[in-house]
Amino acid sequence: MKTLVKISSLLILTSVLFMACQKEVSYEQGNSTASIGSLSVDASGNCLGAVVSGIYYKDTAIKASNYIDVSVQVDTAGTYVISSDTVNGYYFKATGTFTTTGAQTVRLIGGGQPLATGTNIFRVTYDGTVCDFTVTVIAGTGATSAVFTVNCTSPVINGIYKAGTVLTASNTVVLNVNVTTIGPWSVSTTPAVNGITFTGSGTFTATGAQTITLTGNGTPASAATSSFPVTVGTATCNFSITVVPAGGNATFTITCTGAVPAGTYVVGTALAAANTITLNVNVTVIGTWSVTTAPAVNGIIFSGTGTFTTTGAQTIVLTGSGTPTAAGTHMFTVTGATGTCTFQVTTTAPIPDYFPRTTYSNWSYQFDGDPDDSLLIYAIAPTRTINSNTYNLFFYNDGASVDSFGYYRRAGADYFEWIDMGSYVGLDNPYWMEYTFLKDNLTAGGTWQSAQFAGPYTDQAGTTTNLTLRWEFSITGQNIPVTVNGTPYTNVIQVKQELKQQVGTTWALAAYFDCYYAKDKGLIKQDLYSNTGTKIYAQDVRRLVIY
Image (cartoon, rainbow, N blue to C red; front, side, top):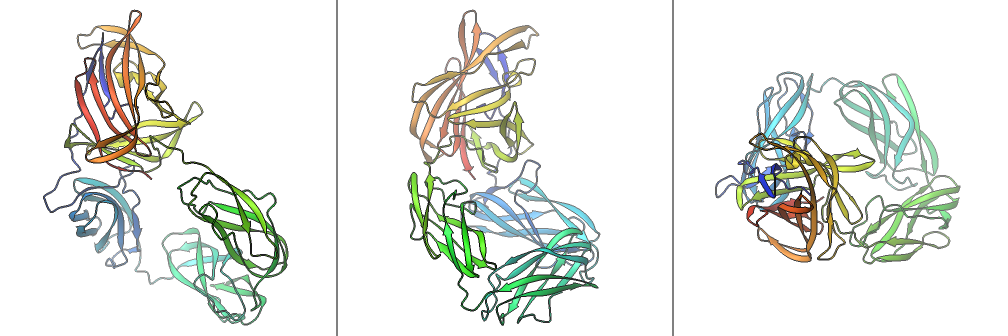
């Protein structure tokens, strides 16, 4: 991996000139009582993960519902003031005290009154860092009702409907609408059908295709399939609800043959919504169903509930929960129908990652122990495909500018970077290539090297020489403990990364890096040395967040 401070010039015959890092904007400024930290920023300078709440009307004072949630990384607890500039007559601000460090969300309350319609860009500041977010102001005060049409085709029916059982907040219907005029809306299926109604209200802030959610109320009177009319203006459409008998329980059989679990199963990683199993069932009596694989096997359970509204062959989906405790293939028994069946799930051991590339993961480094000489590196969501390989994109923020930093990928135990090596080492011309900067499966003493790269180099005196170079790597420590800025790290791989220049038939050392990669943490330390062993700088992580 290249250093966070790029090599700026290469001198002939084992001498390298490096450009010092000139980042004097610190994330550590403040007094003894003020907190220290930074706003979370994406690659475009926008507030990462910012959530804009409320509706903003021209000539209408900002309300309590008008606020912005922003993400911050707190390094030192203390008081804080996070505020935006005033744009179009209104602003956002928050004050308080951070009592803990780490990633946190802060709510900025709005104030003032928008003067004109349109999209406004606000700049938020906190402890010397900045980010932007946008707010759209619309006309009116919210009193004018929206104009829209409803389409009852393919409604999404949620919840269980059982005769004699009162409906809850889970009994909803989602319908498609097309909005031509923004504003508040209200929809109801009154009068009641079979003892129940569906109602909903809200405000459309944009035109076009979207959805509305109606919530059921009341108690179904009897088991039946009923049609519910939705009237908007002069147009009416209908959706159907099936109410099952009061006894409610369906009769069905389950078949586990051919069942394949969806999602990945890794020791120590909690299951998510993607961890499911789809099973074939045959329903003979409609009604509610509940199926589970309890008790837990290997720390996890699959379960599901729902309502069969028709008889015959169909499928059910069970969702996994829990955290796998051991690698291997385990058998799960499905109960809840008129019989039982079994299926298998294979759990794998966790794969260590010594250079995480997950979106929004970020690392803050300081140089030579100086907190005022700092750099933030972070991974963004977009990827780039080069020569059929997909790379994760990294960006940097040095307080003065934000720009792309590098392209990285992994294949098994090998970690790669796609790089303009010519610009990196100071050659006159670009030289794009891929090289392996880490192999996490080698023991101490293991070695490898990059492909050769060559090109003209012009020194400060104007003399041009063709150079041939390569990187040579060696594992100098495997699974070792390392402490950086007071934080202990275990399972660290230490790599010596040497830049060699071909001189005749030999390869002479120009300079080298001493790199430390922590398991599931990434690069935590990197020191640069001259060919004589003199340390040029020390680069140490002071904060990292892995997603």
